[in-house]
Image (cartoon, rainbow, N blue to C red):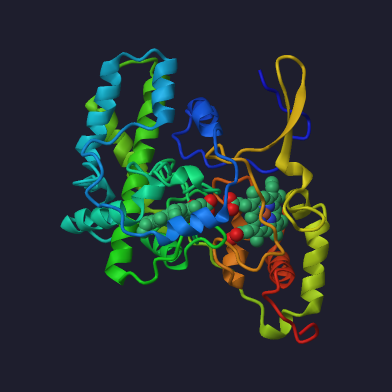
Length: 389
Ligand code: HEC
Ligand code: HEC
């Protein structure tokens, strides 16, 4: 049995993205041994080569989609009879179709532009351009994924890091389009800015479709476990789809907007120095994770695991996907969720969904958040003041 020591990491995984009361099931999901197994960093070059090798066969992909390894693990743990797996698979297929003929349940109509046959066309593009990394079910487990660090995002939990929203709200079409245009710098996720706007919108809808489908799957499995293995009634499936859709339909209401952006004359050395004090200070505690030198190896990233034989070892705290946390090296010029002051403002104010990085808004006011934004930008060499130019 592994136990944590007193130096529990700051921040929480927060993003339950599961119905209230089902957290124990979520813990099961998060700790599944499958998720803890990740390849070590291999060559960045491999990822670049993969990113450049576009054009996989779009016809690959089965008409029936698999349950995730985490779901199967949970069912197995509960000694579920094979009918349960078949029932879950057919419920999901009925609601969402498959990667060859995808559809949104009606309950999602309000969450984005209506998608009929266009979703099918976009899914074909997904199979050609994205599936070899992000997988048939969006599990981040495509054929190329094994070589990549960080691994391609597993969309199924419904958690996305790079959005303009409050923590743990499902991404809008615009959020995903933005990630597609920008790519995710310093990872193998390429920019798809050369695609047309309708293609980008279509792909964003496919990602949302996979994520919503994955979320419904997790909720259904969690509910089945909580019900002590009772058969899932059809009305239960409908209710779960409605509950998940509600989150997707209202996410646009959770946009993070600054009260006021600083004026140009107010972005100088004074602000940067205030940001530096905050970075090292007790209120923001950025240093606890991002480190004294900003290189991303502060003490709060590590936890002590005590094995059953009493031996202890240091491990990185995992994120929601079970991936060891690696806080950004803040000296590097380029951020994954965008490098504009407003992008960083959002990251610092609400934290990063699915990661251990907490939002600072509870301990810091608006001005302090901007102080940190300009401190971080200036350390990364992305902000020049009149004084230090
Ligand atoms: C070479 C592998 C690769 C390919 C091809 C690829 N991705 Fe990615 N994708 C990644 C990686 C790696 C990440 C970054 C994960 C992270 O930030 O931790 C990512 C991140 C993303 C994100 C952001 C997730 C978030 O947390 O906000 C989206 C959305 C996304 N990919 C969609 C797509 C779509 C759609 C395509 C096809 C048009 C695609 N990707 C093609 C590897 C890939
Ligand atoms: C509990 C640990 C933790 C704390 C505290 C923390 N961070 Fe982070 N931070 C992370 C991790 C982990 C990542 C990388 C997330 C990822 O890419 O998956 C990160 C990423 C970032 C990024 C990069 C965003 C991007 O788009 O690439 C910035 C900027 C950042 N942190 C700034 C800060 C600032 C400023 C503070 C203090 C207010 C802070 N962090 C506090 C863990 C932490």
